[in-house]
Image 1 (cartoon, rainbow, N blue to C red):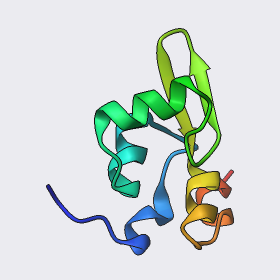
Image 2: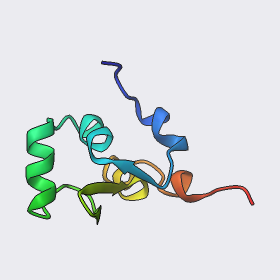
Image 3: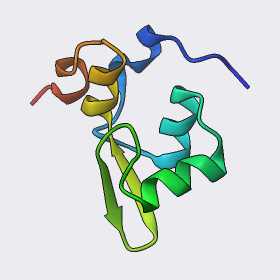
Image 4: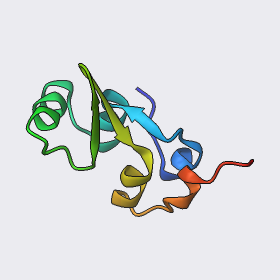
Length: 75
């Protein structure tokens, strides 16, 4: 598995799937789903049916990066 660096997170889409966010945070699959189901995942989760999406801006803020890098899109 490739290590993810903070600089790699600068061009993220607005949301990520739960497993991508978990991998970035170093959380395993079982624990990630357990936390998401209990609404205890370290960043805001958005549930769409059985899918969990994670706010990229919130994830980047948690990691100490610039949240605006994730949300600024050229018009």
